[in-house]
Image (tube, rainbow, N blue to C red; front, side):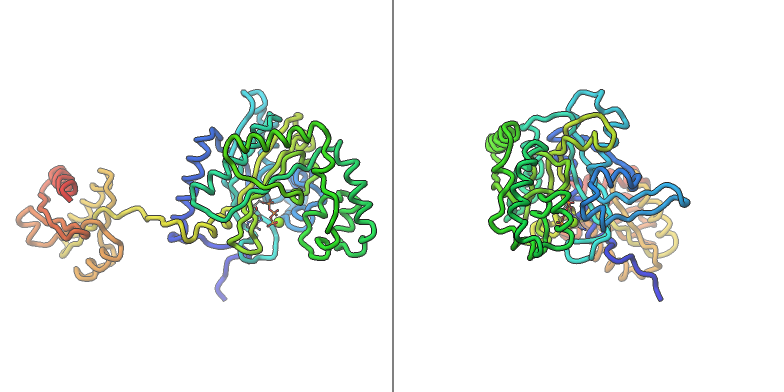
Length: 423
Ligand code: ATP
Ligand code: MG
């Protein structure tokens, strides 16, 4: 039987990859505008990085990582997300000795052993940004604004920004007591995972997708009501800065983004247009993360944005043009074909995209191919043209023709360009 691609992965064929290129270029330009620089980290890391940096209790670490051993010794995992590796790289490469903050972005494949469905794959791609080295609430707003602007640039409608504050260790002590007391009477209704979370990190229960857990949570207290003075002030400043920047938001106290080291700001962009997998982008502040993985104490904030889901949202609005075929040279006979072979390469040297037949097609079939390829111009070379040293270039859109000298390449290019200008 023919070998197929692994479940949950997909080939991006040329027709679609043009859309990816378009999107990636938009992202790179956007990052330059906000002065974020690209970082590329390895596709795999020591498993320990994710266990500590994503969190032992998370679905990602518990169930979704692709982990393997190198010759029975060290354990490695394919990257399931981008943040932990960037924070590692910041410490390891001493980026803290550069002017702060350090503003980074990445576009990377990620790997998670999930049940594949629409918008959920085992290999997918994330665009992410991370800012390291500042606690400023202004940066929280800037990070959010980068994602918001990308949606605007791509003309994506019906997408909502939800923000929350998940507080810090100080606010959480009190809150956990309150939440646990609330959930205690409904403990049996929680799923097995949430029963564990009840002990280890009760706030994560808010993030659970099980319906029974969501029911048990009705009327539960939210952490925004228990923020300490510092966290409350930070949250107020984030909101104020978002307003200053003209970014619309809605407060959603259910957004927790689970991980222990997440602090203060948490946010998500959710679309109403792509069904169950509606969360396109998620992010937050992680001031404790660097220390947790053995790096220097460094505040940080960032987001991860799923590119497959983003592309699903742009399906209708994005019309991407293929790079054009400037000229197709059709030929008849061995001598003319030689000339065509020489000319297409010389055209490319001059920066003009060119093709000729490589299938031994008849002239008629060559013309059909040129048409299918949407060639802008076609040049026909036959015995007659070789004899006279003059040929016709036909503009396929206007149908207009103009003569070109084919004796020397320089003259040919000059004539080609003159004709192209006239259209
Ligand atoms: P979900 O709740 O959908 O499982 P998540 O909370 O696991 O998402 P994050 O870890 O926050 O997702 O990743 C950030 C973004 O990456 C998501 O908002 C989504 O757009 C994308 N993403 C996550 N997992 C997948 C996947 N398996 N396939 C495609 N995109 C994904
Ligand atoms: Mg997930």
